[in-house]
Image (cartoon, rainbow, N blue to C red):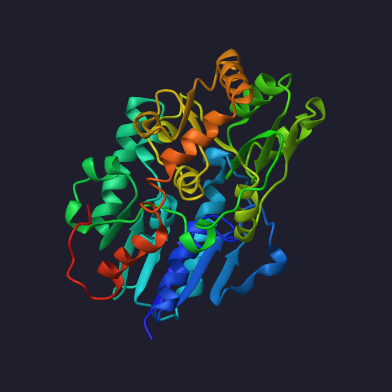
Length: 370
């Protein structure tokens, strides 16, 4: 049986996209093992486990998310621990998620294994200065050259790559089996929800402030992340805000069944977020939930063109308030958007794209998937 080793630099609880890929490969007959870095030591009691049949091995060099260069020592420790763990192992593929994952894989891989660079985002967007962008571009290009295959999720990634012949398209669409048959629960309120990694503190505070005096509007924030703790501390100021926390994928149908609008608004200073298609965008389509997106983002054009949601300036409280008040006064607007979404609901499902992995793993002739 061919073995796939996946490298992930989070604690894998599990990482939903990674887990979907791992399950697909397992169902195809591959032995899959995920090696992950639990840098904040949240799961020390779960060092080795199986999740849906997927073997998971965690490593615990202590560090803190978002601490920048201070994580370097712990990151190097993680690389060395993984290298030592695999030194007597036989595997055919080392499938590395994100840039920090492929750095690990390129250093530790065996000479007989294939290196896969799974690019979940546009890394060049993470540099605020031009010089930093060029440096990141150089690093990304270096590891693309070293890789046997490259998975990408965004057209921009393909345009700026010199390795188009290695590239396989695999966007992070939601699973139809999980979200394809959502029944919305009735409510007298307009329910504005965010479901995902909670990072954008200021944008959420602006939403809370904009809605605090609007009757029959409820806000729910589901997910963990760097902004979660600070937001929890603010909830006592608002009587219409509910914040939960990290969730299991099994909770997604419940969260979407209680959502009338999805709030996918990010800082316009973050180029990565302004140019990306987050999974919640596709989830909103599959679940027929209108979405609110950032003005100036890549999502603005399709949201307006297809009439599937709304656009706001995330840093403008008055602009947000005007939109939510307009919707609250005329909730029929939501039904109009839902009708438009129904025309797209079958176009963005994981089941329709995941077999692109076969170009890597099942011997189908290699070609770029556009």
